[in-house]
Length: 406
Image (cartoon, rainbow, N blue to C red; front, side):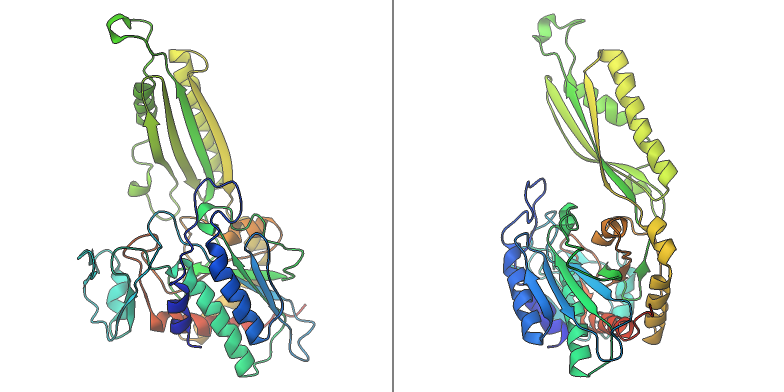
């Protein structure tokens, strides 16, 4: 099956995950795609195929004769789509021989602008796939799923020699828990790649150190007519708290390796308020200082309004995989060789986010990230081209056919 056909099939599945769910998967609908992938992998002849009770899908393409002693490699992608925008009833729109200009999305008349996504101009002449504007597309990360299985199928069809190749598909990556129950006792790869980036010539091995930070504010609510020296307005304290953070250190003012504080949500009234932040930095020491600064904010407000007024809770999300990958840098070099072999120049930019691979790297499976060819993730401007996916498949095949000696 061609990679584009696979992709269009997979985006028809509604697999949106859900924030703050107590179980994995966070939504049972993710099983619909998981069971389809399980069926396809069995039909292709993979061994050790299973979809477990938590919606993780595994399979093994055993090594060909003479390659049994090479290091086993793995390829991982996630099945869920972001809860930030609708992923239900996706209606992909194909634009053959795309002209490299702005695109008007058919249902909403919103404009996918080349000025916002400059790489679009280089896609001229290709078959562009966009949304109709009412949903996201699902290239993040169903493109990765389609590319992995298409590459595996090509190895089988063309009898290309290879070592053990493990395939894994995860739920709930978009809500930060996709790797939590990934079974590394079953998935016996020595190293792996997530296929979850954008530019098809990307090999990324740096990501943010990440944490969530929640401030709860307890107010004192009395009648405003007799409130002097008694009332503590929690909503007003919440606004004051936000004003204490550096105004230039937010997502809309930073790029590259620059970290930030991002106010994700705020709710409140006089008696209580809540502020939820995500905190990010590539540098481990700067990241630690950011968390310490939030503790200072908590302390200062409690000194001003009384102990217990403000409570800070910090939860670590993931760490920068660089400290693990640099110990196994041959994995990156193998990917760079494969990218060059298909005629692209490899690009390694710091990921301003995280992947399953970051958490898996710290669990003992070194796992940098490869590009899929898609862009504009998590919203109506998500897009990809057929040719970019085909190139990503060629990169994967090149990596697969050159396993590392033990």
